[in-house]
View 1 (tube, rainbow, N blue to C red):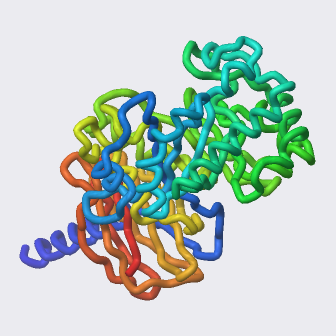
View 2: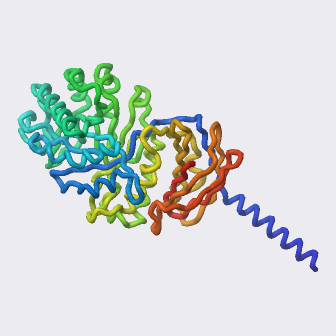
View 3: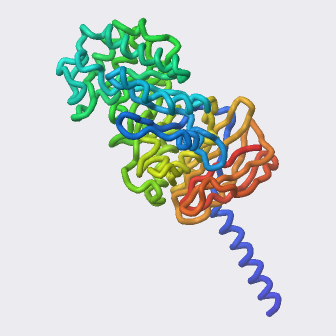
Length: 406
């Protein structure tokens, strides 16, 4: 009887071991498989439409200390009225002081340049005013540089395919080509030129630019938004040597601290990285649904952004990783020029998931885990030793976690 009992215990232990091994998922990270360079993660600031960030809120957004988000891009509006440009300066200066890139986007040219003589309700930029429009854009960038907040990237138009009753302007893909052929040479070559920032990353607006040798030569970044679409790779843009920036989106306007809604931001960030986007920019840094809530505190959505923005800094490169080791578990990996490794895991399942990592063509000695969930905010979750280029971790349930090498 005792022998049978021992055999039974041994069999149970064996079955348990097999079960645990079956539950573990394998992830391979290959340092030599390189994808896009990361330019950063950011948000929109819009003084003139809503109140500016306070200095304390700007520090919380762009700083990298505990409780700060580490955003590395700030998007701003080029007001059609140059007498209002001063409103953009204070937060832009703070963002720049933390090393953030500044992206400037016009929603409309000045009214007199448009065929409807109105900054609202769409309308088109008249060709007779192409020269004046370039002056308008260059004057803004020169003004900001003079205020100690130099623009890194300049967009030609926000959402040319959307014609609301607020500031807007209608451009076609052919219009961008005509404008760039006529005026591209006058755009400051030190700026990264962004186009077309369509509502749904619609390639009908960017393909004509990419396929025209002259227009293509003046554009550095293909920008687009994610309204009504999911992140998708854009091979033609990459073939033409352009970076892809997701320059505006919000998943919904629900409470930013509703965790069941917030975790979808983590999934969209993962999808954007897998789609080879070099930048991801949320709409409105501070809003009830924003990265900061109206009281200036970092929201759950902000902490999820931090899982990427604080650890994956500009200049990092996304590298090969098993992207979906099992259902509802999403993995991306990144390295910098010094070989530092960052791995982000979005676990949208309701249970802990064991992940067995194998590193190829590179090594680190240990990984530190930080996690955001309904109860955690980029919390320290321990260290993992790497032996023979392998280590095992547990991904927290319904959480976004980042593993950072020493």
